[in-house]
Image 1 (cartoon, rainbow, N blue to C red):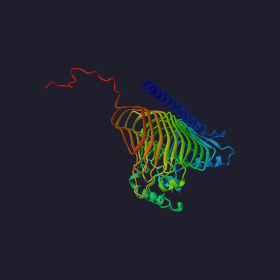
Image 2: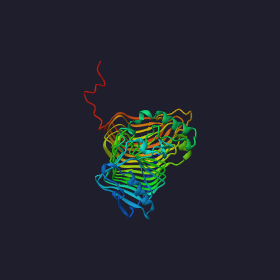
Image 3: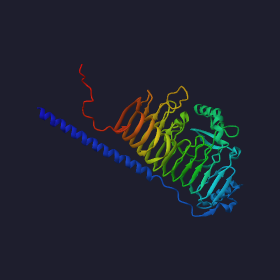
Image 4: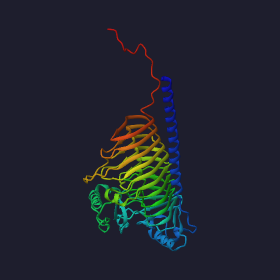
Length: 468
């Protein structure tokens, strides 16, 4: 009887092992299939055949002459030209007294040694344009490079884009509180867009580069510095490739790349060095985000070097939801406060799901992996708790976490669930694991604070039984 029971038990163990093996194989195949499906939807635009030099329209790279009229003329000419323009900017410093507004079918090519240096006078970025500010649609100062409802556009080359915002826009954060409160009010009270005008007399900083309701976009190679606010804001746009960019953007809130309500995005081979989040995936804020119901989705971040405040962030403006995000084969260029950071609160709602973190390494951090449902809550007396689930981590490392290795802070009304950690290594950490309001958390091959070797044998030094 004992032998029969043992055989039955063995059969169950073998069946369970085979099932788990099969399930793991199927999951890996499904994950890879989703990854490849997303990649197949992302195709950079082709470069227009007709090439023109910006100097043809009166630009001069002496750092003094206002070259905005030249860029405006080139864009107007491209609009009339069949197939658009490949606009080449040769070496030199081109002072631009106001924004560059893109049209469709344009490639702006900054040659090595070329620099676009924007005016630091806020009045030059008026009249206001339709945009978004921290998840709320408003009219505001124009982003310095702005494309609205355009397609097949590129910014490429080895040149530099200098927002030159350090002495004006870069100092505005201390003055923005009243305007920020107003954006929250119009969001929560469904105020008509016509009554959401900011601009002159207000202190909402514009983005450096923004493409809004646009598609088929390539940003490649250029160096970005001194942004007035977020560096690259991809708003309600799709089919976007960001590749080989370089940053030294350390002003306040100089996020590197912020996709919002956007999809089918490839972010690869980028050297970040930002005064805020390297990549922050967003999807609208609170009431307005939930009503818009356009998730940010199908986003691949791979082969990047992180440096700045946080590596990859999901939120906090994400009320339309975030899904199908891959972070693969990334490393560090320097310190990050947090490596992977999910941040939301009970005002946001929406969801974060189907997130895949594979083979990502950091140096020293405060926290390696952090999920919180209680980030910077604004009391609206509403409870729209975000559903956070189906997160798969396989290969995540750091040398030291001065605060914590793995943190999950769910919310009692909507517990964070189905989070999977595999092959995680934190060499040193003050706190290894802190999970609250979390369930169905799976950990496999996780080491925090070092790896324990073989147990020691009993010796005379072990005074377990002392003689009395």
